[in-house]
Structure formats: structure tokens, C-alpha cells
Length: 177
Image 1 (cartoon, rainbow, N blue to C red):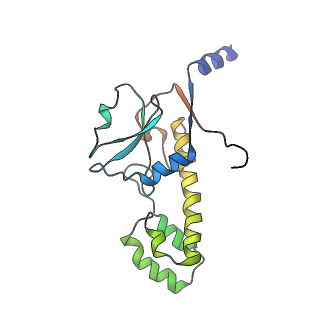
Image 2 (cartoon, helix red, strand yellow):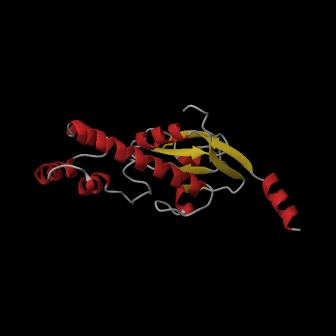
Image 3 (cartoon, rainbow, N blue to C red):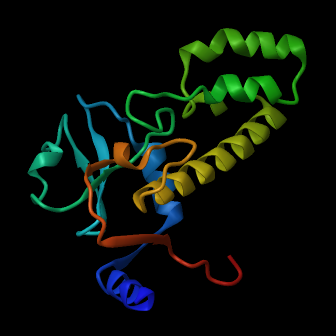
């Protein structure tokens, strides 16, 4: 009996492959400002869409299509920001005086422009830190699309209109990449 249930469940779900690199770019580009735009992913159309502000509200995108909110780099879940710069400053391999100087600037910038403030090895270290964070954030978002709660999201908070008929995965990496 269990085998039949698994076959029915597999038959009723469609595998949707996403590009992890494209997803990370969408996370970085998402302003998450309802007055400008917010990013969503439509599972049926299998594309990222912009909504609110300068674009139609998400309710206007094909009623019945499941929509998932795409996180923003500095705000993984709506209304819940992360302190990337402050976290990096705590562990960055820089002198205490430089750390104090940068701490004065940190509240006046965001993670997108933070790299412009840094010098030499600081910038390299920041980009490595940011890359690791974005990979983890993207992986958590994908897990939440599949109904799992993660360190950054509860599954129900990312779905504008949920659907259980899809199973999301990253495109398999090709050898040599």
C-alpha cells in the first residue's frame, strides 16, 4: 500500500528545476520595496516576476498560479532583516581600529554597496562571506519552496499562493563548472 501512495504522490507533482546562479542574482536585485517592486517566483510559469510599486500587484498575476516571495539580500523574510555587515565586522580579519572605523560607516550603507567601502583584502574577504551567505540563503529558499522550515524562513511565509504539486530542485551542475 505504501508503494502505491508514493507513486500517486510522485505522479501528482511536477519537478521544477531552477538555476541557482539566476536565483542568487534575483535575490541580490530584489529591492523588496513595495513602492518600487518586489520579486516573486511563479511555479506554473517557472519564471521570476516583479510586482507592486511600478508593476501590477501579485494578485493580478494569473489567479491560481502559485507565487513564492523571493527574498532580498538584506531582508530574507518580509519584515525581518539580517545584519550582514555587522556580522562580518565581528569576524573579519582586520585591525580593531579599522573595525571601529567601519562600524561608524556600516549603519549608513547596505550589503550591496558595502564592498565599495572596503580596501584590498577586506573586499575579497567580504565577497567570500557574501557569496557563502547567498548560497545558504538560496538553498534555504529552495527548501522552503518544498515545504520545509529553515534557518531563514518558515515555509508558509514565502508563499503568496502556495501549491503542493511542484517539487523544486537546482539544475544539476555540469562537470567542469
